[in-house]
Image 1 (tube, rainbow, N blue to C red):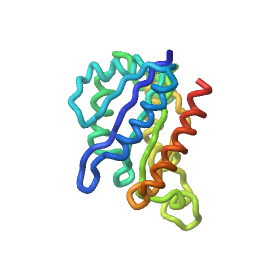
Image 2: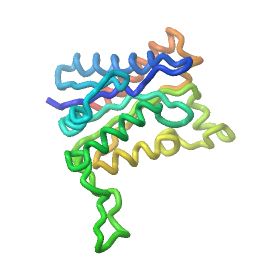
Image 3: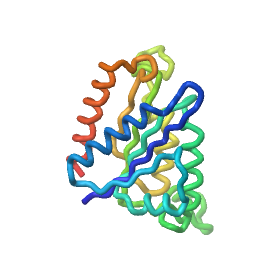
Image 4: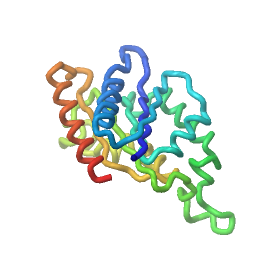
Amino acid sequence: MKKIFIINGSQNFAHSGGKFNQTVTDWTIEYLTNSKQFEIKTTDIKQDFDLDEEVEKFVWADIVVYHTPVWWFQLPNLFKKYIDDVFTAGHNKGIYRSDGRTRTNPDINYGTGGQLHGRKYMLTTSWNAPATAFTLPGEFFEETSVDEGAMFGFHKMNKFVGMEKLNGFHFHDVEKGATAENIDIFKKNYTNHLEQIFKTL
């Protein structure tokens, strides 16, 4: 059985209650549980956690699934702190060994010191921005995708520790467009995405 570690990176702040990413987390658990092919561990970053146990989850997993909203074009502060703390605690404990360089030739091999080789990860994000803000000429993100723009550093972080990227899923216009009808469409499209991703693993 494939081992899946699911992280809910949402938090409560201002007008955000973190409910949508909890819903997406629940959809992921529902899909994987119904398939009966996966062993699942989870973390909700809003809850108390032990750093060494979180490191062990990353080392244990075949696939890490990250769920996060995007605030001010970055990860929420608690999720960023979670990653900073857990990855740092994972130094020489299975997450990363070094930055990959040697003192004899420090100009090459940066980013090759990760210890999570053989693992894969998938990212979902949720945005108030509509999808067209990323695709239409003259719009805010200048025709730059989520993965190549706002989440570029996130993907490099995972590459640094040795993980391979699976195609992610980005939910757009969540705040203004979260009608019951659209939530049903989100679930259908996301479930189809999970089917496409996990049937090839």
